[in-house]
Length: 306
Image (cartoon, rainbow, N blue to C red; front, side, top):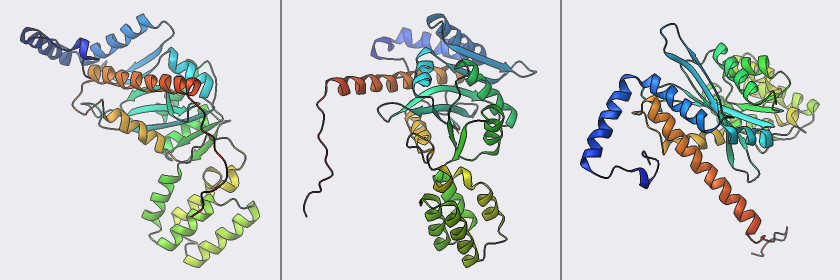
């Protein structure tokens, strides 16, 4: 897997020593090797988009990239965008930000990725600006995140017309940590998922908060202020491609974890990331083939008698 396939594996001891020597040289110039790797990809894919920012010490601060296939995926499926950061997947513990969506087979598809040194508002604004440049200005109609304040600011700044939805899973986890009341958590979950009218939602909310005495609880007040970002009542009629949570993002992290590890330097990380990306695309081609040549499975609403 590290070599990119059986045909590229090391055949004998002499080649092994040469490979170790090359790896040691790469570690001394890891940033240079990473940039050269991206340049090599650019030479093969003239439509690929890459941008890199360095700090005052000439160290890579932000690296954003997407290739031609990712651009096509975004053009077809970019109406709903999810993005999340995963950590400790390289030697420097740089967060990897993955921009993803859902394809026509209901599988996750990657639009772009970035390595960043921090998660400030300015960084996320820069990332979304690069995404808009790469995708020729096509904005999503909906964005799903885990509620990070820096992400929220960036979405409001760069994608003001997109409906921002908070991840339901993260909200329920935070409810357990902040409210610390199982009965309240159950009532809160009902408020999140049930399709009330706005008037009924307001009455139910007031009744629930009064019942548990949470009128002055800061987290509860904050969640009511954000109700348009998580309650089904206020999200009715908006297209989210089946997204309720960022679990798809976490699923991508699981897939990436099979290929990249915390011991990898930047050059090796980028190499392994693209091997993972190619595997996901192979799976998408397989889905296309099966949908075209496979036999349809008839489905009815009839239930099997018990």
